[in-house]
Image 1 (spheres, rainbow, N blue to C red):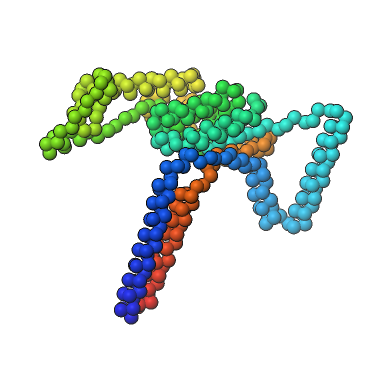
Image 2: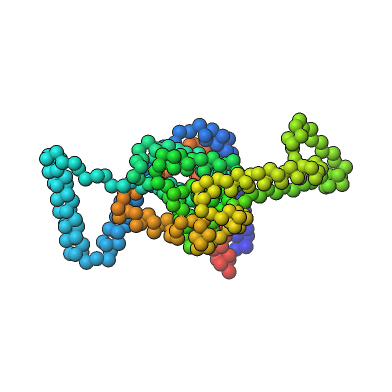
Length: 354
C-alpha cells in the first residue's frame, strides 16, 4: 500500500508540474499581449436600478405572498399600466402636453488605488453622461479611495468638475473611505454623504523614501548624480542627501499642501481649515460635526429612496476582453481547479492508507 501511494503521489506531482508549466506558458503569452490593452476599444454599459429592485421584490413576493393574492396584485398592476397608457394617448390626441419626464440619476463607481487608475474609465463614463444629462438630473458617484499621487487625483477631481461646470447636481457617497486624494474628489460634490463609520479627511501631503547612501559607502560603492538646475534633484535614494535639498523638498510639500487647502476651500468655504487640514481622518459622524460632509447615510439607502421618484441608471465603462485576459482568466481558474483536485486526492489518500 505504501509503494502504491508513493507511485500515485509521484504521478500526481508530474501531472501537476505539467499543468503548471502549460498554464505559465499561457500566462506569459497573456503578459506579452497585455501591453496592447490600451489600444482596445471599450463600451458603456447601462443598468436600470429601478428594474433591478423590482426584480428582487418580485422574487421575494413570489416566495412570501399567497399565490392568489399575488395573482390579483399582478392583474391590478397590469390594469393600471393600461389605464396610464390610455390616458397618455388621449392627452396626445387632444394636443395636451404630456407629463414631464421623470428625473434621471446616473450612478458611477470609483474605486481608487494609489495611481487613481480608474480615472481612464471615469472620464469615459462622464463624457457619456454629459451627452444626455439635463440640469434637473443628478449624478451620484460611489467613491472609495484612501488617496495616492497628487497629479493622478488632481485629474480625477477635474473629471468631476466637468459635471459641476454644467450645473448638473453632483452627489458623492462614501461607504468606506475618502481620504487625502479621495477627499480631494469628494469635496467637489454639491452634496457629500458618508456612512457612519466611513473614514473622511486627511487633508495633508506625505512623502517618504529610504536612503541607501551609508550602505553603499560601507561597501565602497560610489553613486554619482549629475543635474542641470539647482533643484532638479532635491533628495535621492542612493546619493548623499543634504540639508539644503531636504529644506527644498519640505518647501515643495508645504506648497502642495497649500494648493490642496485652497482647492478644498473653493468647494467647501464653510470649513475651518486650520482645524481640519492637519492630515487627520475622522469617522462619518465626527466628519459631519466638522463640516467635512453634508449628511450620514449609505449609498444603498440614498439610491433606494431615489428610485421612488427618479429613474436610476448605473453607468459603467468596460473594455472588451482581449485574448490575454481570457487566457489569464482561464489559467487562473484551471490552476485553481487542478490544485484543489490534487489537494483533495492527497487528503483522501491519507485516510485510505490508514
